[in-house]
Every structure is written in C-alpha cells, then in structure tokens.
Amino acid sequence: MGTTPSVTAGRGGSSALPPGGDGQEEIPEALTPEELAAQWEEEKPPAAGPLANAASSLVVLAVGLGALALSVSMGLGTPEKPEPGLWPFLTSCVMVALAIFQLVWGRHNRDAEKFTRMSFAPLTGLATLAAMVALMPVIGFEIPSLILCTIWMKFLGSETWRSTLLISTIVVAAFYGIFVLALGTSIPHLF
Image 1: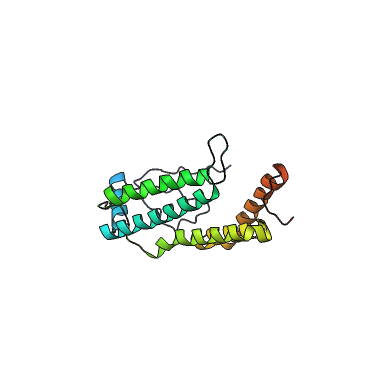
Image 2 (image 1 turned 90 degrees about the vertical axis):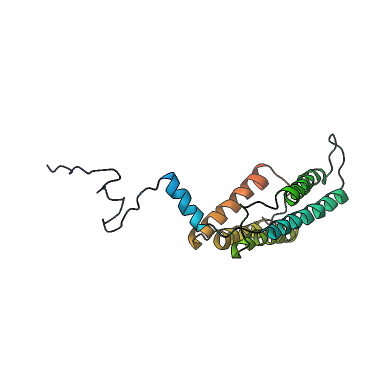
C-alpha cells in the first residue's frame, strides 16, 4: 500500500501543484495590500483634467434634461395615480442634480480617468439598448434580447463565443418563462 508524500505549504516554498497542473507553471506570490495598491497605481489610466470632468458633467446634464422633458411629455400624474412619466421624471431630477453637483464641486476630482477606447463602451451599451427598445414592438423581445445579450457579453465583456451564446440563450429563455408564461405580461413576443 503506497502512501502520499507530505507536501509543504506556505509562501516560502510551496511544492503543492495546482489542480490539473504539471508543475511547470510558476505560481505568483501573494502581494501585500501596499504592494497591490502600488501595482494598481502604476497600471491605472492617466487622470482626466478639469475640462474633461466638466465635459462629462455637461453630457450627463444634457441627457438628464432631455429625459426630464420627455418624462413630462408622457404625463406625471400624482403619487396616488401615477402616469408613465413619473418614475422617469424622478430619475431625471436626480440625474440633473448629480450633474450640477459634479459640474460645480467635482471638476477638480483627480480620480476621473482620461477618455480612452473603453470610454465608448457605455455608448455602445446605450445604443444597443435603444435599438432593442425600438425593435421590441415590431418583432417581439426574444430576438432583440438575444442580440443585445450577445453584443454585451462578446464585444463589451470579452466572453468566449460558447459562454456568450449559452448564457444569452438561457437569459432570453428565463425572461420568456418569467414574463410571458408565469406572469402573463403584455410584453411583445413572437411565440
């Protein structure tokens, strides 16, 4: 009967192999919190200046004011009998208030990052979401939702094609099961 040799563990010379490993890979040593903070400081993108902070605040302010106008045009109603524009109105008010706060007091913030290629990812997300909302009344929610999940997972989230297609299909099937079959909502659907 053979015995398993003892394995030393710890920072100073672990000979334990990772599951499925062949011993050829080097395991990185754990960093202290100070070392990790220094590494993050070196890797972070350059800081944005006051002009970029003001510009981003103005964009948020413009979107908030536009949403505010659209929500008022939908009708607000009262708290007892709300109309479709009430919650978008309240959300738009918060958005406008935060944009003004950032514009006045936050323009010297040093934590804001400079605009990079990844700064356009939220715009891509917003555009695909708007396209989904526009297509839902025409062709139902299943196909636009599947396309939206695929774009977000593969191109914005850099997932593999296998996980993208699998999870996107499961999400759409779950939404169909919850909103169409279980709750019987009037959401536009194909099947």
